[in-house]
Image (cartoon, rainbow, N blue to C red; front, side, top):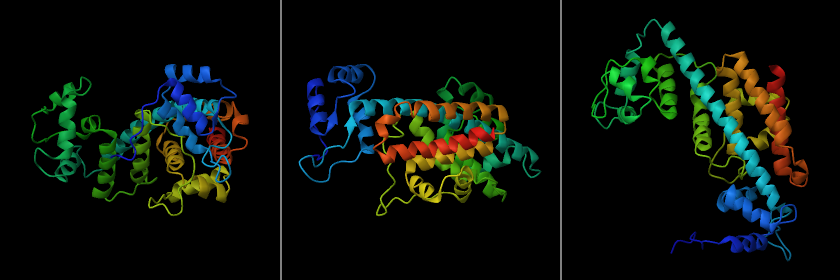
Amino acid sequence: MNKCKKTLLRSDDLISHMENRGIKFDVMSQEDALNFLKRNNNYFKLTSYRKNFPKYQEGASVGKYIDLDFAYLVDLSTIDMHFRSFLLKMTLDIEHYVKINLLQSIEENKKEDGYKIVDAFIASKGNDRENPIIRDIRKQYMNPYCGELLDKYGVSYESESISDFPVWAFIEVMPFGRLREFYEFYHTYYNIKDRVNAGFLLRSVNQLRNAVAHNNCIINNLYPLSPKSVRKISTDNRVSNFLTETGVNPTMKKTKMQNPRINQIVTTLYLFDNVVTSDRIKKYKYEELNKLVTERMVYHREYYQGNPTIKTAFEFLEKISNHLYGEH
């Protein structure tokens, strides 16, 4: 039997279950909590934010959450919703400017005609129908936004090979993850130095983009990874230097960047700042971020005064936001 299999809980059972785990209903009543679950969020998703709260390790309340009201979970879920929306728009801007920068480099490359690099990239994965790049592009044929473009260059759902496909069209039909691969391939193929190490950093941005696009929770676990964790979190030197410039102290930098979610968020902010060439877009985005961090995140700051994990995470993000906002 699956050890993770749990009983489906009904409305009244959910309240009792949460109370048994130490979740209180002082700030928000049980009735309002049930209405919120019915109209705004589901139990599984909302209660995932409880991971940010410690539990009693001994005594009569062992295993129960310390100072956790249902209203705190609601507040974190609302902040998360706004943050996901912001990050999705930011990753879309990064994708747009990565394409612009890539095309500009190819246009200036005297060894490139706009077709050679595409042929080489496709060939690097094999030359048959199961080639993953060809498979990805074929899938786009039924897409009303890409099908006409593919048809123009003789690509259909039945295509077993692709040739004479120009890079300016190619990058418009690739999913984000494949664009990242192509970006790295191009720089390696021509031995061109990647000024901001964007190819490597796009891996983090890609994961974050997929998460926010699918409405996965972002700030439901702000703890750093355990030193014993098999998952190693590394921070690119450029990102680390960027954090130093923001004035974040070394201890906070080390601690917060050991959380994979925060690490990806900061990496995305750094890459956005370095690949987007429009000062107007940067100014608009940093104004939006600053408003989110300095107003909405701290709207109920009293909820988290006794929770250093959440409190310092918000302070960390505010420090970065103030730096970016001040620079533009």
